Length: 165
Image 1 (cartoon, one colour):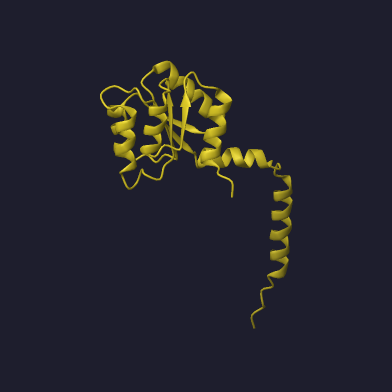
Image 2 (tube, rainbow, N blue to C red):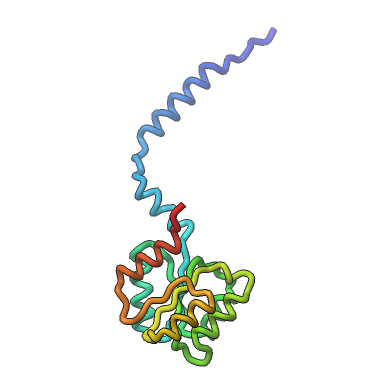
């Protein structure tokens, strides 16, 4: 005659120890959770700017707000990023780029099925009405004149990446 194995004692012990160990874990704040989530699922911002100082400044500003900045000095460097099949959520681009200017590059990008839905912000020292009009024609979401206000840039980036629901 075999004795029936009773599992309720084992189950109770496991549940008690699990609850005890869970209670010993430090509580994670919502901010800590969001920071961890951002690190695991970064929001990528592509910056196309030929001036090294401006490029690095934009990178620093974006990374302070938790974004991952991907940098290209011109269309040639952009091809290296595109070749790696990197995904980005926003494009910030200068107009006065060498070889292929920002308007031409934006037009090509907006005609591409995988890139056309990505918001584009021009950041340029050129600020004639004609420049604003051309920016709208190629599908730019916004246009910021250099020298730019950091808080304005942050507000525009945040608004485009976190639209109200």
